[in-house]
Length: 236
Image 1 (spheres, helix red, strand yellow):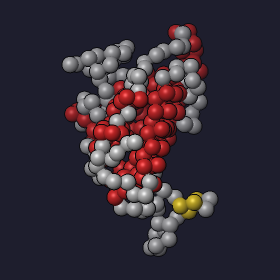
Image 2 (tube, rainbow, N blue to C red):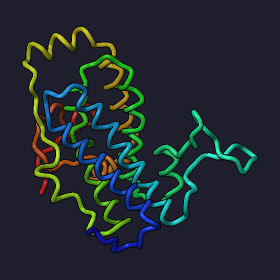
Image 3 (cartoon, rainbow, N blue to C red):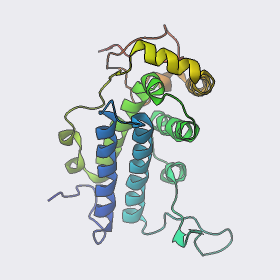
Image 4 (cartoon, rainbow, N blue to C red):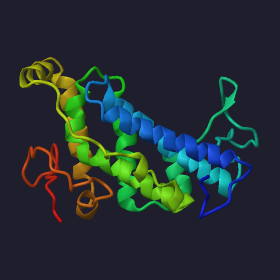
């Protein structure tokens, strides 16, 4: 029964793609909000990247047609992987769309790079999740805003979410300390990446709600620094 207020659907395909994007986002939140679920932070990031990618594909399909695939250089033919056309990944979609605010883009590019770094490392993703909680919230917030911008208010997912992302630390202090000692090197590398990425942002972008939500109160780890978790105390 949903109606698109921004654009009419192209033969149902766009609607299916948008619905798939929304389903991926809702599943990402569901997994994140189950603290005992294995790889919850990693799965949240992966599913939200998929959700954003499908959202852009739906937009391109509706506005330009079936063109969101890579072509062989100097050829009208499409590149294929295992017999299937290779679709644009999220970074290419961002560039092709070209209309995202700088802070929204910074948040998305952060997760694209972070996903590539954590998916093959055997680290305690929960500790990483605490560090990037504000960015995770912003990723979801920006997704819904972009969804509404492209396809209208009727596609808001607020009513489908009892909460946004829940902050929870299930591990005991002893467990966390032991894990950090065992995995210190990989965690250090990830934290260095996070610190370096944040320090490279312009101050106004780093402080924006579109880059990292700062209205939810969680433990404060550092003072006036982009290292670890920024101060997320309510500023309103």
